[in-house]
Length: 228
Image (cartoon, rainbow, N blue to C red):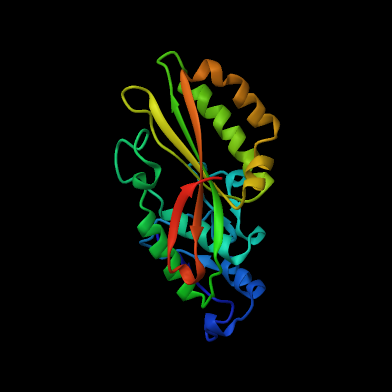
């Protein structure tokens, strides 16, 4: 899912725009899809809004204008996120997704915008669960959707992905945040409290793993490690 960039002045190359403030402006000003692209963008008149989850209503969209260049670029690269194996619910986190493809897309975006990437780390949450047959999936979905809109409004919520339960009811949902502080803030609202209160009746088992995604200077290397 590539994103095509149209500059305010098409004759001026991106490399001519210096400074993080200008880059962020370019990233959010005129993002339009080519006809063949399946793009995570809401609409042509809302170019700064990015679809970063399975939910496409406006209050679920990421406002790229609220992010610095590193976070905006990674959020755009993460529209490519997909699972590589069907057993993602139980497989090692780093092996479950197409991280190499995401990083290659990030490198492409960094080159496209002439940006000098500075080492940045991101907060990653992996929620592993088991859903019993008695759970009404629509009820679970309604709670999840409400919590997502709340987290999006709090800021710094770069990506949300979740799969489908396997034959044993096991599933994985994962969030990437700008920081741990953003994640804590995003989980304090009434929607999250309501979802947490319902967890005992909706899940027979759940586990939360925390990781750190580190992308080093100039996107020369990257790693995912346990959060400490």
